[in-house]
Amino acid sequence: MSFLDHLDQLRMHIVRSLIAIVVIAIAVFLAKDFVFNTVIFGPRNPNFPTYRLLCGISDLLCMQPPDFKILTRDLGEQFMIHMKSSFWIGFMLAFPYVFYEFWRFIRPGLYPQEQKAARGLVFICSILFTIGVLFGYYFIAPFAITFLGSYNVGAVENTPSLASYVDYLTMLTLPVGLVFELPVVAWFLSKIGLLYPSFLRSYRRHAVVVILIFAAVITPPDVTSQMILTIPLYALFEISILISARVARQREAEWDEDGDKEI
Image 1 (cartoon, rainbow, N blue to C red):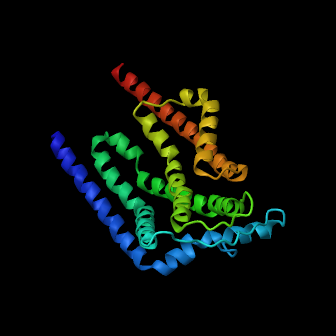
Image 2 (image 1 turned 30 degrees about the vertical axis):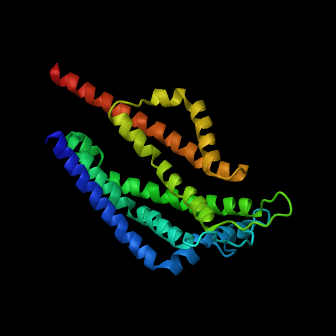
Image 3 (image 1 turned 45 degrees about the vertical axis):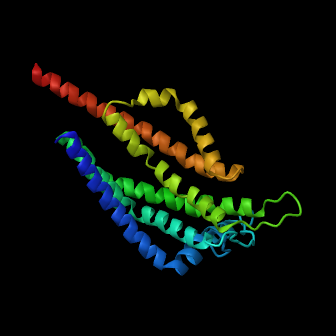
C-alpha cells in the first residue's frame, strides 16, 4: 500500500472510532438524570461506596464529603458541560472499540510471530484502562473532593462551578486510565527494541520522582491523594520492568534459535 492508501485506512479507522464515541455519547446525553445524579455527583454523596467502605473498616479512616453547593455562572454552562461530560464518558465507554480500531491499523505491519505474541492485547488494554478509570473514580476522587471541598482560607464559602467540578472529576479519572496502560507501552517498546529492562532498572529512582510529580499534578495538593496514586503507578512501573525483561529473554531465545539453524 502507498502512503496515501495508509492515510485513507487510518482515516476510516478514526471515523469509525468517532462514530462509536458519538453514538455512546448520545445515549449518555439522554440518560442525563442517572449520569449526573448517580455517576458525576456520586463522589459528593455520603452514601458513596468508598465512604461506606472506609467507615466500615475503622472510625479513624471514616470520612464524609463536605456539603457544598455547585453553581453555574454562565447561561449556557449546564448545557455545555452536559455535552462535554457526555463526550468524555462516551470515550471511556467506547475505549475498547477505539483501541480495537487502532490495533486493526497497526496489526498488519507486524510480523506473524509478533501478531501471535500480541494476541489478547485489546482485551488487556481495555481491562487496564477500565481499572485505571475506576481506581481514579472510587479512590482518588473521594479524597480529592473531600479535601478541596472542605479546604478554606477564612470566611469564604465553597461554591464551585459545575465546570470546575466536572473538570476535576475528569482529570482524576481519564488520565489515570491512560497511565494504567504503562505495561502495554513497555511491552510494545521492548518488542521493537527501543526499551530494555536494564534501562528501566538504572532509572528506577528517576522514575519514582517522575511518578511523584505526575501524581502531584493530577491530584489535589494533599499527601493522601498523591500517595494513593503513586503506589499503583510505581507497581505498574515494576511490572513494566518484568514485562520488558521477559520480552528481552524471548528475543535472545529467538536469536539463539536462528544461530543454531544457520550452523
